[in-house]
Image (cartoon, rainbow, N blue to C red; front, side, top):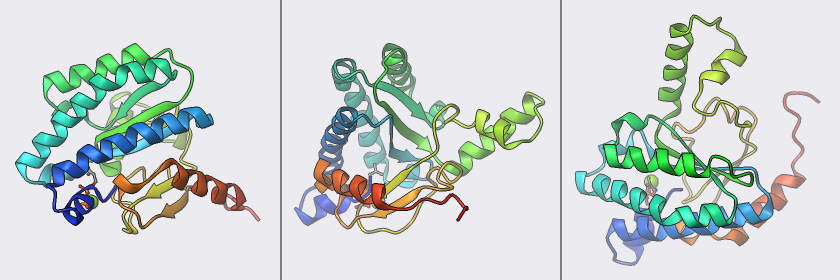
Length: 215
Ligand code: IPE
Ligand code: MG
């Protein structure tokens, strides 16, 4: 979800207004995916590198996250959405960690869409933590065992990767899980992204021939 800051700048607003608008789009796209029958939607909300932003912006994002999770609980329950977080939660405040755990446990039995928020997430950090876990457990180094120790254990690999705002980079997102992802880079800033844009991408995705290294 890239381009919140530039969306705001374009309108002479503070960057934080862009994040607020972006959160509304998260809600819209999540509900749309649930209605379409998508099984997993992962949203990259805060990266391990985002701590390098100005302190006030980081604080705002933390508050917004907590507010979003609180206000979303009803929507998760009404739409049968299961919530999961990936990333290293240990760097967050106790109250945000509690809210994340509560949202996960309350929605754990929901059977529709799994909405995954990547929070203090970096793929290199995730793989490093997975390898640590693997050695702590004394497990053999195999593809299956590495996957079982990733934050995404039990989740399917990525089919569609979308990045908004015109940047053509992966920026440390699910490097392992995107091995055969189909990539879509769209010009629009995240706050301008709509469910119709997602529909167009899915239509395009269906037409792509995926060979997974075969012929
Ligand atoms: C992405 O928007 C949202 C988060 C990282 C929370 P940006 O904040 O990166 O927006 P730009 O790239 O500055 O426009
Ligand atoms: Mg950005």
